[in-house]
Length: 154
Image (tube, rainbow, N blue to C red):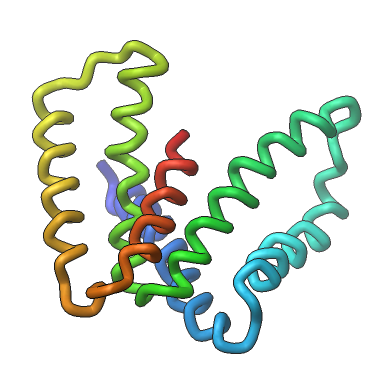
């Protein structure tokens, strides 16, 4: 694998994680759903000039945006408003293990031994993380963030 490919692969989680670091202090000034709405409205207003709305697919676009943005980010941002950003970033990484589990049940894909070991390590890590002192008494935030990760995987 080229070094450029590794850099691009690392850039994606860095940018996504940085979004949480910016969103957390912004929640002191804006309500959760207003902040989430601004996060999607501003880029949409810019991109609509280059990418026109697909005619005849409005209902499908509505369903995808409702589940993939409104529901998922609503759960994640509400959880982020309760817990700290570093814990939320780690909890959101459960999207991958949830994706493996959902693929098993919905698509009948059989996970390999490596996948099962990875799932066990991921969930043990989350179990350890939820016992951290910074998350004590904030289990609603943890559950909301994990629910957001599950929704995104779905």
